[in-house]
Image (cartoon, rainbow, N blue to C red):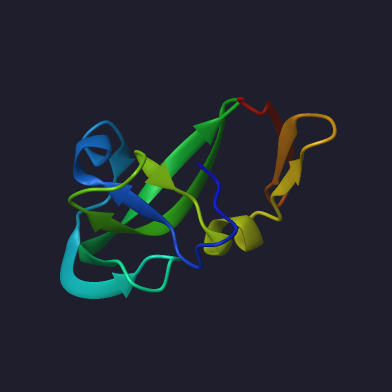
Length: 107
């Protein structure tokens, strides 16, 4: 899930098991949800690889025990890949150094 309200990207441990990733660097960190009150804990960080239309991207994410979704791609990913959330055309565009990836938005 893309989340422009999140400065960083996160993944829950269960979803992490389904990904290709480098070893986890265990370093506990504490964050507060966008509501400004709800704390959550990151147990470590890991670089994950995300493949869209046969093109791989990667990002360093915080690993959490529990999350409202499998993975949140925050502004770090959005800025790195110049992600365009095109609501009018119901598609997402992701730009790598040499290619543009276009995927449909889910409702």
